[in-house]
Amino acid sequence: MQVREWDPVAAPTEELAALVRTFNLIFAADVPEDPPWRMDSFREYLAVTMPEERRICWVAEDGDELLGYASILLVGDIAVLELLVRPDARRAGVGTALLAAAARRADAEAYGSIGVEVVGDTPAADFFEAQGFRCAFVEMRNLLDLSTVNWEQLTGLAKGVGSGYRIEYHHGGPPEELLDEYARAKATMRLNPAYELELRPSSYDSERLRASLATLRARGLKPYVVLAIHEQSGAVAGLTEVVVPAQRPTRADQYDTVVVRTHRGYGLGRALKARMLTELRTDEPQLEDVQTWNAVGGEAMRRVNDELGFKPNREWREYEADVSDVLRRLDAAS
Figure 1 (cartoon, rainbow, N blue to C red):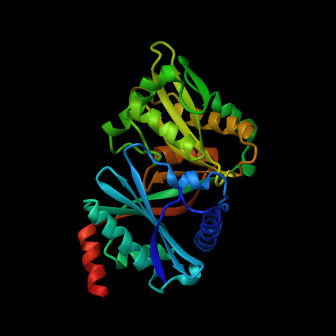
Figure 2 (figure 1 turned 90 degrees about the horizontal axis):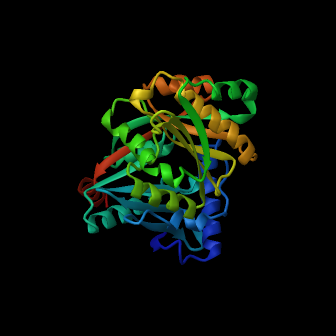
């Protein structure tokens, strides 16, 4: 078995296809309810990052057999790790070898912390805990099976907003003339960390939002946005974001849902999400379900999701470790 640095931009198509097959073997074993990955825009999905970020990838191989994949996304002050090992190659040192390559590179790039997202009830949690990673955050994934939706009721919920607000749907992201207001609304999330949020990647200023939307599209991820506009002021009072990936087009991915504090109590959160679902039914007819995440213990957004028909599915855990500690453990075990 060998581990080599791997560039998705230069990789032959057959290597990308082998990685898609490996992804599907892994997810079929660990999260069998998830849709299979496709080759559509898969190279772009792996290769494209935000302008100030970099992704470095490795593959583990035994001859022509692909055993596993790892990458680190260098963002801010942390190296964000993804590490996947084929089920029939586990407990053979593949994950440890990939982790070692990633941790050494993070150290060489002067990153002191490394983080990883782990699906609950899979072997990954035990692996990372054994490597000294600590659980820093837990959230619950919720799934909405679109075949179970009462669309007539949902259409009614989409109209259930207080007077003085209008709901707008935008395919592709917020319009340019609302981008500053949109960013201002998203930035309010940081003012109250205790507010129960739906948790996905976020951008809080207009320039970063432009870059984020361009990056999503370049990676094969189609963004959709629904806005609540306060008619008297023209301010963005609330928003919800959904992305549909070319790589798994039957499942939509919920990003942020935000209602600005001064505009809460008018039914905006429920109406925003209901309107989004009714629009996706037309624009993305192949969709089978929508996934979203909430902080464990959060009640406000959970109640909205319950009313819309979302069901709790799995815990998602975020683990962190000091790069120096990971390397020390790996060196001691070798």
